[in-house]
Amino acid sequence: MTEMFKNLIAGEWAGGSQVSRNINPSNTNDVVGEYAQGSVDQLNDAVAAAKAAFPAWSRSGPQERYEILKKASDEILARKEELGRLLSREEGKTLAEGIGEAGRAGQIFAFFAGECLRLTGEALPSVRPGVGVEITREPVGIVGMITPWNFPIAIPAWKIAPALAYGNCVVIKPADLVPGSAWALVDILQRAGLPKGVLNLVMGRGSVVGQALLQHKDVHAISFTGSVATGRKVAEACIASSPMKKVQLEMGGKNPLVVLDDADLKVAVEAAVTGAFFSTGQRCTASSRLIVQSGIHDRFVEACIERLKGVVVDDALKAGTHIGPVVDQSQLDQDLKYIQIAKDEGGKLVWGGELLNRETPGFYLQPALFTETTNSMRISREEVFGPVANIIRVKDYEEALAIANDTEFGLSSGICTTSLKHATHFRRNAEAGMVMVNLATAGVDYHVPFGGRKGSSYGPREQGAYAKEFYTTVKTAYTLA
Ligand code: NAD
Image (cartoon, rainbow, N blue to C red):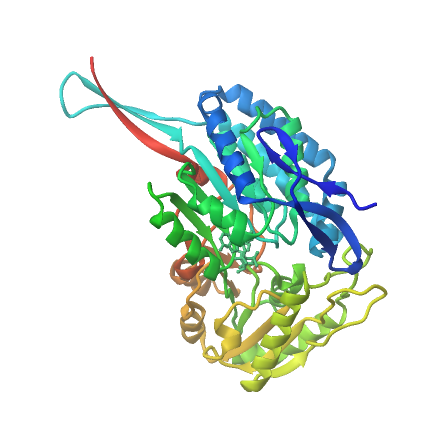
C-alpha cells in the first residue's frame, strides 16, 4: 500500500482532502508515496502556529537552539544512506549524488548549530558624551520558504537551519514534484525537540499554497529558490504586501566555463563534463556554456566526446550509473525542445540528445553537446535546466571574458587555464557571484556565501555566516548612562 505523508501544522500531522503522487523518474511505475496537498486554510493555520510560537522561540537561549539543530544534524548524518536513497528515488540524481546531498544537509545543520552560539553584537561610544550605543541582531519573525525540486533536501536545509538558529519561525512549501526529502527533514527536526509551531510544513501547489504564503500579512520574509519567472512574481508580491516583506531570491543561471589554449586538457574536460551534465544538468550552477579558445577547441571537443562515451545514463539507484533520468516529462519536453531549437539555429550536435530505453520506464536522455554555436543563439541565452551544453569558439581571452559576461545571468563563472595572469584577471572581472578556477561552475562549499548577480539572484546571500544578513534584522539602541 502507498504510504501517505501529511503536512505539519502546530506540531501535529494534518492530512488534506487532496494528495499528490510522488513518482520515481527512473521508473514511473514506482510511487514513492502520496503527499498531502495543502489548502489555503492549512497555510493560514500554519502561519498562525508560527506566530503563536514566535515570542518564546525568539527568546530561547542559544544552547537550546544549538542542541536541537545538533541533534537533527546527527540524525541526518546517521541516516544519510537512507535519506539519499529517498532523494534519488524521487528526484533522479544518482545514489552517490543523493547520499552526498543528504550528508550536506547534515553538515549544514551542524554548522548552524555552532552559529547559534556565535551571534555577536557591537557596543560603541556615542558621538554624544554619556550615551552608549549597542547594535544587536534580532530574528526577522515568520519566514516563508518556497523551494525548487532539484536539491530536495539541501535547499530546505540551507534555508531552515539559519532561520531556526537565529530565532525565526518557519512555514515551508517545498516543490510539489519532490516533497519526500523535505518531509523527512521536517520530521527529523520536529523529533529533535522543536517546540510546536516553530517549523511548519505545507506541501502543495505554488499557485495555491505558495501564493497564499506570499500574500499572508503575518509573514515577514520570504526566501525563494526557483526560476526567474516565478522569482519575479515572488518579489512583486512581497513588495505589494502590506507591510512589505523582506525577500531573498535565488534563480537561474547560464553559467560559462572558459577553456583557454593553455588549459590542462584533462582538468578542463572533467570540469566541463561533470559541470554540464552530472546531476542530469539540473543545477542552477551547471556549466551550460562552454567558451573555448580556437587553439584547443578541436582537441577539447574530441576529448569531451571520448569522456562522454564512458558515461552511463541509467536508473538513479543502480550501481554504476553516472547520470540519472530527467526529473519528469515536462522537463524532458523542455530539454528536447531546446535540442531542436539549437539544431534549427545552426548548432551541430556532436554527442547525444536522444531518448534512451532502459529496463524500467523513465525519462532517460543522452547528454547533448553542441558545437558551432554563437552566444546570440537561444541555446546560449536561455536556461535549459537539463543535460544540454553548447560550445562557443573564441579567438582569445578577451573575447572569452566578454562572452562569459554577456548574459542576463550571473551565478557562477569558471575558467580553465594555467596562466596566473588570466586566472587572476578572470576572478576580478567575471560578473558572477561565484568564480571557479580549474573547477566546474557547479560544486560549492556550505560554510561560505552562495548566490549570484544580475538576473540570478536578488537580496542577501544564502549559506555560511552571511546567511544572518537575511535571517536577522539589526537594532541600534542608545542609552544615556
Ligand atoms: P519554479 O520557479 O517552477 O518553482 C519553484 C517553487 O516555486 C516551487 O515550490 C513552486 O511550487 C513554487 N511556485 C510556483 N509558482 C508559484 C507562485 N505563483 N507563487 C508562489 N510559489 C510558486 O522552479 P523549479 O522548476 O522548481 O526549479 C528550477 C529552477 O530553480 C531553475 O531555474 C533553477 O536554476 C533554479 N534554482 C536556482 C538555485 C539557486 O540557488 N540559484 C538553486 C536551485 C534551483
